[in-house]
Image (tube, rainbow, N blue to C red; front, side, top):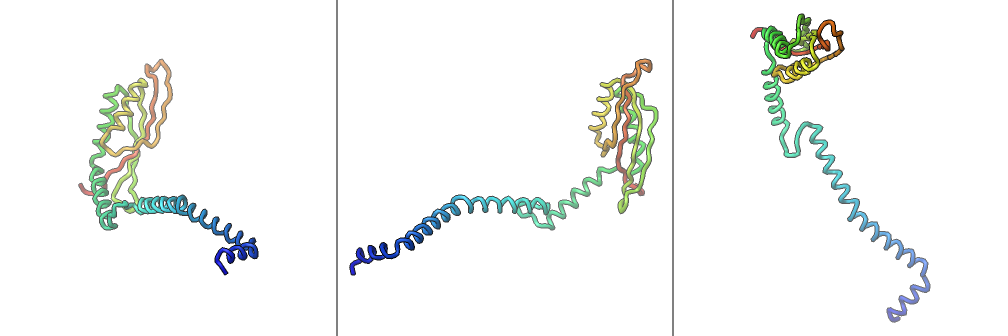
Length: 187
């Protein structure tokens, strides 16, 4: 039997089956093209994002720093940070600096209240200072700006600002609560 006749008899005898096989073949080709053109690049991109995020979470970098190198760098950074924390004998220097900043801004700093506590599992003392300043609004802004520019490790814990009467000759009253650290022990 010639091949053309064989194909004709196959088509007439199994038309539904051949049509189904043809549709399945076309669907398979369409799905393969979709997979290659869209899904594989998307999966590869998301895999790279996942690898980068995992590296960031571990504190490393994609460049391949070893954990020992990262630990050594962390120890170095911690040492530099701790070197910036003065000894508790420098506390009077902080008080003098606050008074000088207030004087330069033209504010009246009459009294500073403070307390300290030892940090757990550390040789650090946490000092909390509270005080009130009175003066013009611009002078208060100048003082806060100078305080923020100080090389000391000072955080403003709480700040309050209220207007005061004209009879006292001032415009505002600033209540500040600051926090800083000192190293305990012999210096």
